[in-house]
Structure formats: structure tokens, C-alpha cells
Image 1 (cartoon, rainbow, N blue to C red):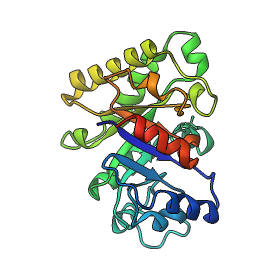
Image 2 (spheres, rainbow, N blue to C red; image 1 turned 90 degrees about the vertical axis):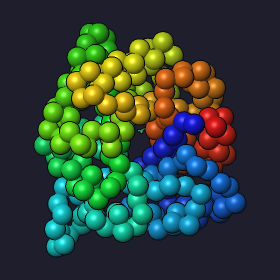
Image 3 (cartoon, rainbow, N blue to C red; image 1 turned 60 degrees about the horizontal axis):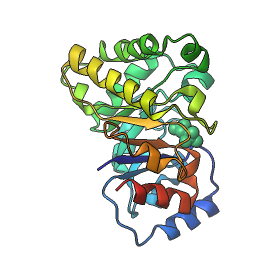
Image 4 (cartoon, rainbow, N blue to C red; image 1 turned 30 degrees about the vertical axis):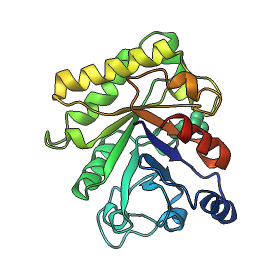
Length: 237
Ligand code: PGA
């Protein structure tokens, strides 16, 4: 069964969240994670979704204004947290040191980090996407305690596919997911779940579902539209 992760970013108001929760109220899923803006996490606590967060503090202290710690996320039953999303890498200068500290804070609280990696359009044009991806994996994994490796999920999200309506071909996705799985198997001796993300929608989901090796999807905009998200979930069961 594929893991479906809906990253709602900053799209929705409280009223829209209420409508969304109401729409999904009688549904039952085992494999769907909702990743709301922090302020709406409580709205989903009794829902059919497992809970995720879009970020976590680098700090573990109790007196850091404006932050949300891993310990607090755990107290809300958050099970997954996005780490290294390209919007945070580029918009908030999050580099490897920050990402490693955040991942360690999550793992200490039994929360699964979903590590987002992906190449830019320039890197794909230069055909250096494999080197870029290998670098993004090793700069993190080489600093984690080896007992932690298999508690991480990877999301492959080419930056040029996020929010653009463009996706790589099935062959390109399959090649990259294979490549990622082989690296972590060879270098870190683990079999990890690898998700695909970037412009997943109800229009392309049946085509994407043909790629058996993909363990699930990280979905942005389409996870904020009720019928669209339900359609994607049902098509991927
Ligand atoms: P998108 O976003 O589905 O809107 O392209 C994906 C993501 O940023 O995780």
C-alpha cells in the first residue's frame, strides 16, 4: 500500500480547514498522512489521517519564542515531519547542519523524518542529477547514528516539478527512485521507503501508480482540494 502524504503548506484558512475536516469525517484510511500548517494540527487530531508537521525546531529548549519543538509535536501524536523541503532550503537557508539537528531531535522523539531531496532544472539540464542526489543523501546520512537510518523516509522531489504542473517521465522517476534505494542499500545497509513528489494530481496519478517501486507520494497543492485529494487516495489504494 502506498504512503500518501499531503503537505498543505500555507494554503488554507481555518474555515477551509473546517470544511476539509468535515468532508473527510467518515472516511477511514491506514496510509494517509496530513501535514497541515502548525496552527491547524489540532483540527485533525480525531481525523482519518495520521499526523505530520511541516517543520520542527532546531532547538529542544522550553523558552524559544515562536518555535515548535519535537517534544511538543510528539505530545500531539505527530508521527512524521518534513525535513529539507526545497522551499525551506532556499527560502530559509536550511543547510545540512540544521537538517541533521532537526532529524536528530525528531528521532529522539520517535517521529519519522521525511527527508526531501531533489535537483534543480539547471542540474537536470546539465545531467548531474545523480551526483546532486547522492550528495544530498550522504551529507545527512554520514552524520546520523547508524541505528537511525531505517527510521527515515526519503521524498524525491525535483525542484522544477514542485507546483509547476510538470513531472518527470515514469522512466525518469523509476530510474531515480532505484538509484536512491541502491545508494542507501549500498552505503548504509538499509531498505528505505522512497516517495515521489512534485505536481502529483488526480490527472497523473494513474500513470504514476504504474511505477511499482515508488512507495508513495508527497502531494502539495492537490492535498488542499478535498475531492482531488480523495481521488488521489482512492486511486492509490
Ligand atoms: P506540489 O507540491 O504537489 O504542489 O507540486 C509538492 C511539495 O512541495 O511537496
